[in-house]
Image 1: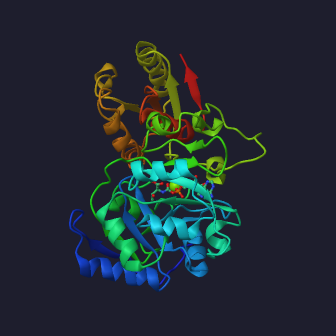
Image 2: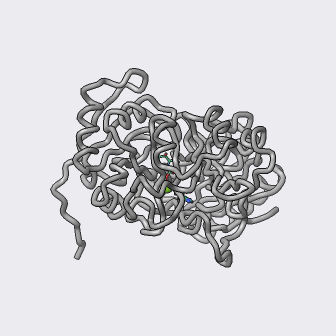
Length: 363
Ligand code: TXA
Ligand code: MG
């Protein structure tokens, strides 16, 4: 028999103006955070699921609700750099330059955490570092300020699903499991923040995201890419994992996905062959493509374009949305086109590789 977990929660939806957030609605949400509840809110990258970072019970509920592995710490969202100084042991000088240049914005920085300001172990997952960011979104900033506390916020999806870029995505995963969703419209960037570890020397990029690696290199020419950021296969043999989240299953659509990588002409040829083959086996085929290539395939398949190859930012913006759209179709296998690695392309390809479970076909 189907087991349905009953909750007493009815999720409140707050429609909020993304440019000038209505004070009363933000106050309603902030009160929920202060009482230990969970509020999903938009950031410039993806929607986050927020809890008071200083409240161990609230953070425990956050992990349970998302079904998140307990060794995967959330990013702590702050509204100003003073909070960063309070929560950290030291801020290296190169970090101050980064903070001035990229905050508020899609860059998460990992610091050694303060030994005096006590964040509960539920929030830090017992690590001696913390991940901080100031989001570039008026609703998120108003909520953090009004709540008067740092907010722990992982992406507002069930663990393993693509991150949510609209309030509807959050609702699809978490309806009646969380106290409120602030609907501030679709997010601008569409992939999560870049995670940069400044607790090591040289600084190491752990997760490519909304701030391109090239932009970070202009300030930190010695910054390196962690193998996880660029890997084309599942890395299970690395003993010291600096970012636990990188090990877990992620972004997966319901259908199996194959990522096809090579020259554009070879990608088209390979997808054409594979789609014929899978459909002759009786499988429903979906193709994740781009505006320039979408008409290369028979329109009998379920074809979804992420946007034009001339605008990688738009592709990043639509990636998770398209993966979630496939979940609403009967498609059983998704053949996905690779895109170039420049700019946000590195983040998009990192998500596509994980979404495919590293089933990558080179052609
Ligand atoms: O754009 C984003 O970053 C979104 C929005 C909501 O801000 N948040 C987000 O959070 O993507 P989440 O929890 O889905 O991903 C956080 C990543 C995980 O890979 C986690 O392991 C890593 O940051 N992380 C957090 N604290 C860390 C730490 N102390 N050391 C290393 N990695 C850490
Ligand atoms: Mg996430």
